[in-house]
Amino acid sequence: LEKKTLVGLLVCVFVKSPHKTRVNYVHAGSVGVGVMGVMGNKGGVSIRLQFYDSTICIVCTHLAAHRENIAGRNADFANVFQKTSFDIGEEAIREVIRSGSLSQWATGSTSVGIADHDLVFWTGDLNYRIDESMTTERVLELSEKNALGELRDIDQLNLERAAGRVFQGFDEGSINFRPTYKYQPGTDSYDKRPDKKLRAPAWCDRVLWMAQEPSHIRQLTYDRSELNISDHKPVYSTIQITIKDVIQSKREAVYDEVMKLLDKFENQTLPMVGLDKINLNVGEVRYGQTVTLPIQVTNTGKVVAQFRLVPKLDENALCKPWMTVSPTYGMLIPGEPPATINFSITIDNNTAHLLNTGREVLDDILILRLENGRDYYITLKGNYARSCFGMSVDELVMYSEPIRNIPLDAIKRAEKHDPNPTSALCVPKELWRIIDAIYEKGLHEKDLFMTPGFAEEVNQIRECLDTGAPFGKFRIHSMAEVMLSFLSNLSTPIVPPTLFPTLEIDAQNIQSTARKFLEELPPIHYNVFVYVISFFREALLHKETNKLSAAKMARICCNCMVVGTNGAMDDSSAAMNRRAGMQMIMIHLLETNSI
Image (tube, rainbow, N blue to C red; front, top):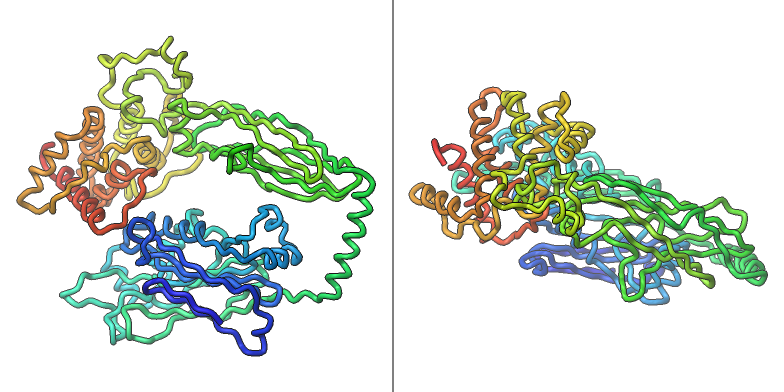
């Protein structure tokens, strides 16, 4: 029926002859997300079509490689998902709307994305691996024994999906076959040749799906083929789906009946709705918190009321980035129960940085448009409870009192808290408090810095740091998570990308390179870096009980002090070599006797 290629990617769609006449509006597309975010060495190809009266999209992708590059794979998925678009034309859109897609009517566009289809199938070499917490040798041992339970529990794709960071809304069948990568081509044995780099086996090749109606999909088989021409074992799945087939005569009869009813209402008067409130005040909002307030929309007229949120003049977005609205459109028949629109504010790292620097306020106006009626203006306000998270260490060291007491307004801040550079702290007091608390609790705890804390405790600890309140009896894993989160969420990472090593590092130049790196760190960043490294070195003295190692600590240091949550992962080989060099410097500083 159709095929689409992109470098080494190929997706083909076949249809049996008896059904070919019921296939319409076939379109293909591709998205490159490789080098510089556009090249085709990584990316996706896709084909969409209408089969009978259901819309189907089939996507085949090749995502970022390397075991540690989880963020790169997540970003590649998001890019392909968001950038894939098919301009299917007005006739196809009318057909989709006639089949009941109110969302397509709301957009007013002739283009559809992946999520706009009834059924989506996502396949390919997704490159997710077994988490690095298990050694390569242990993964090989379990894979060869077909002991899959422990591997499934730490499969990166399973972990990332469970955390809601990737493939949101997608499902996957249970994996009951051995990892499909990496094999020695021409054999059925994992590649352990001494002249090749030893790779941990992984389920790189996957089949996932998403359905508007989950009951319309049932997976019958999910297995791998034993072909051995590649270093991957191909994966296949047989899936039974339910397809819509509209009976035209009945649809036309229902359509005529509805149109007569709508005409009757429309002829009586214009649409009217009532909103239970148009001014929303969410009060105080904290970092990492989501606050939601509802508005009830009631049809107070005698005709059908169709409403949708529209952007303000000369703007493209419905609202500011820190707000989400659901639903953004709807229809109310007279006498129908009110519809609820939820307005949610979330303070993430980017928003916190903008609020702290005075470039943003929690204040917005949204426009609710009534088709063939008036516009309603909804105002939303909130107050940000200032947090040390999302700030820079250079600003934090200027204040000796709790950051919650420091006004966001620059004028008020200058009047009462004019920072004096001569009295600046060496390191942020918040970092000192959390490290001191972890030290007091003892550094012997098993899997320290590797085991996540408890969400409720994490929020309480963060509040203590922001307000200066004493810590309660919190568990050490929660304290450790807050410490790493604080460093990861600084507006500027402790180690700027400009200081990544440019030369290949070896035993002869590691000491001089590390010394040069320390000398080039900005003063406050130098203090924080040395303080954290010294603390981690103290933790390594208890490695027999806490099971830490210099390599693990170096990886943690790179994640929280080099990349952070704001860092866009460069997937080029040069950038990866520079990051590897940075990790070698970290290991050297953790193992050396002095800094």
